[in-house]
Structures are given as C-alpha cells and as structure tokens.
Amino acid sequence: MHALIVISHPEPASLTHGVAAQVAEGVSLSGNSFEIADLAAEAFDPRFTAADLAVHRRKAPPPADVAAEQERLDRADALVLVYPVYWWSMPGLLKGWIDRVFSNGWAFDFSPESKLVKQLGDLRVHLVALAGSDARTYARHGYLGAMKTQIDHGIFDYCGARVVTSELLLESETQDPAAHLAAARAIGRGLFDASRRGEVTDTA
Image 1 (cartoon, rainbow, N blue to C red):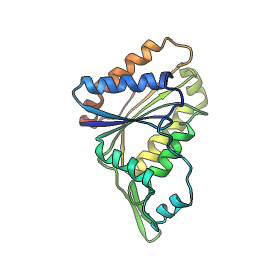
Image 2: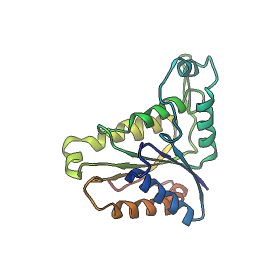
Image 3: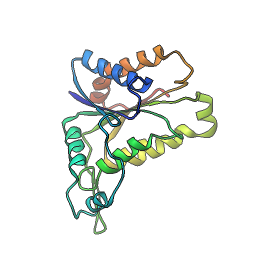
C-alpha cells in the first residue's frame, strides 16, 4: 500500500514537518511505502486562474502541474494531509492545492445537464492538523465542527473520498512536541489498518 503525505508549512524545521516525517516513518515501519509532497518546497502555485476555470468548465485539460499532482494521487491508496491550523482552517497553500487539483472531470464529474458523480470512492483520507489552541477553545466556539463540515464533508465527501481518521494535535505551540511526534508515528503505523477496515475514527 502507498501513501501520499502532503505538507503545507514554509519551514522545514517546523513541528508540522516533524509530524509528517513521523507519519512517514510509521508507514515505512508497517511495511508500506510513501511519497511526500512538500507544497512550499516544491513551489506549488495555489492560485486558481483562468486556466483552472477552463478545466472546471471542461473546456481544457489540466495544466501540467495539476496533472502531475493528480498522477501522484492516482498512485496512492491513502492521502495524508499534515498542516497547521490557520484561522480555524487549513493554510491557503493547501486549500489552493485542493482548489486546483481536485478538479471537475477528475475528482468529480459535474455539468448543468447531469447529476454530480463522485469519482474518488477508492481514496482514503487522513487529516492531521496542528492546532495552537486547546480543546476548550475549539469546543466553546464550535471550531472543530466547523472544520469538519468544511473539510471532511464539504471537500472529501463531495468527491466520494472517505475521511478515515481526523486528528487535531492541540496546543502545538506550548506542549512538549514529543507527544505529538509519538502520536504521528502511531498514525503512520496504523494508517493502512484503519484504511482496510474502512472505519472512521476521530481522537480530537
């Protein structure tokens, strides 16, 4: 089994990168393979341009950079997104990657003349978000529910992909990082066990 681990953080020495590395280590220890997509290091352009709009309208093929990302996803049995929470959501770089890569004709099929067809039914998704705040803040303001509605349901369910695990690593700027790194390795080790079972878990 093969995992595509997508990282959205500009600092290679960040906890986000450390968590992604531990997820990858766990995947490897479980006897599976992985590929890392470091969006900042690879200078992925998140801007949704007229060319992307033409793709959405089924008037043009995807640009080369988008096609390359779709090919990486086609090779993967599981997608792991590792990212810091910015303004109670994912960073703009990661959102732009989704905006452009999860395009009409690939992630889903839609036209005004026909019903929506979800095309990513075989993809299993694992979300690992690093949050600076504590659990009480997320509960008090309903931030976690809002994130799940937007990301888990609004993005991935729309395309037919199953979010198998959704982890929120809290107090990432104040807690000892060792606990988060250990949790990340455990996520990686169990990644395909969870995917094969098809169970949806949430430890946030």
